[in-house]
Length: 289
Ligand code: NAP
Image 1 (tube, rainbow, N blue to C red):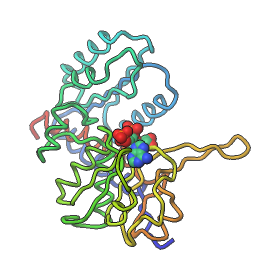
Image 2 (tube, rainbow, N blue to C red):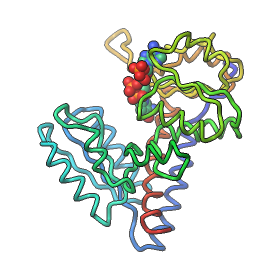
Image 3 (cartoon, rainbow, N blue to C red):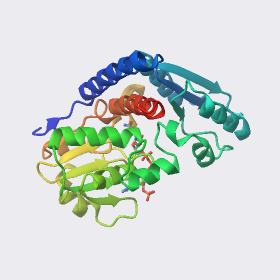
Image 4 (cartoon, rainbow, N blue to C red):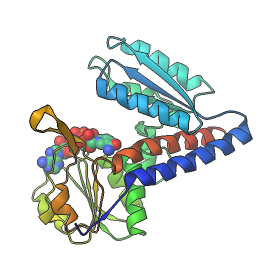
């Protein structure tokens, strides 16, 4: 391996410590801690784990963690009523409705009902619009974390060629907007892209957010590129065991890249750290600070 391994855990711990310091300052000035409330509908085990770790991280940063766990058959109207209540609760600075929602609930309608000033997931159309316009708003946590890792590795990325693979509203599209705002030249690839390898071959930055284990091959990578692997895929091993792998074929890519994130321990830890940072930013903005 010739690439420098990007330590997302260490970078996330540093960001969380920075947020905790900011929270202490906020409490000293405003006499209250910022509050993040997470809403989980249904009993998806993975979502329950995410919600649990978000609550723990929120408390560790010195913020108030609120949690609602609603049954899977909760009517959409009840969820919208809860969001409306949280929108007007002065102690709540951030609202996160855990996705995916049960199929009878229209997630776009729920996201649109969240006060954009409290939308710490950065998915409300107002925040999406602000991001695309290059204006200040709440930015989705995973791409935010990726950009921090990229900038810390490469410094100024103005003029760099970037390829983002995956065009979801959660990761790929906001990632492309963030890189564009940082003056990179961005190609946004997806399942209909022709000759993905040719695009990746000229990329100084590759961000893979697809959900297909090892689909980005090492021989496609431009020597010295910064490779950010967002994918989280669980693959079965012999003996009933399993392990997590990313969208990048790690060993072959690490032999050519300049920097690379591992899975796990790369992008994943940054997501929660950026959620905490967004909550503090939302609290400061609401307090006019
Ligand atoms: P998603 O909504 O399923 O989007 C996947 C994207 O990949 C789509 O845009 C799709 O293209 C594209 N794609 C599929 N097959 C492709 C191919 N053969 N070549 C090029 N592009 C292809 O997924 P997501 O929510 O963005 O998540 C992507 C991955 O990141 C998943 O593994 C997820 O678990 C992981 N993730 C990790 C974190 C974290 O904190 N680390 C956070 C969020 C997501 P089309 O649009 O054409 O269908």
